[in-house]
Length: 254
Image (cartoon, rainbow, N blue to C red; front, side, top):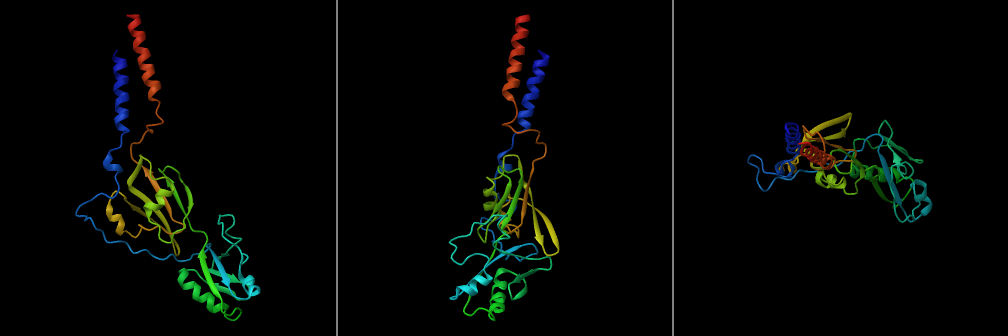
């Protein structure tokens, strides 16, 4: 009977150890003197980096000039972007930060925003195409979400301004064993990468520079400390059945 009691106590201890409190699961809590209204973060424009892919469409009354620079036919109704097709429908940025346009040669794009690149390409193509309308888009607009989320993976983002909550929603949200106070984000910058830690329990994340995600960001959700198992993976029914059977056998023997 002492053995049975010990097993029962151990099972209950594991049960309570695995429980996650509501406070640890709640987003955007008030901490310190946080007010209901938090100054919004100012989103930065993404700056092009080596190995990015730019989709450039040249629209002009004369189709033969447009087809010279377009990587897709001008009558294409839409663009279905995948990682495999990115190189086929776009211009790749080389290691020196340039793209190479037919006849026009190399154009420096690294370290510049899309808004800065568009007029420069228009000016470069004036010698070849008159009255052209230029469209410049970033093709490899992906983020990666890893760790304690329901559906980890790499996701294509279509919005220019996507915040971290919208990004996590792509992965089905954080799971119950994610440490919401210590999420990490890896962001590429000119010359390397930076790693920052932030909490989404605190509503001051709304004013953080990492509130808005950037292309090529990697978000990692680490597990809470002391997580031994998942509630839905632990064989409670098997253990309870074993204990019950053991008690019945002891009762029969006595």
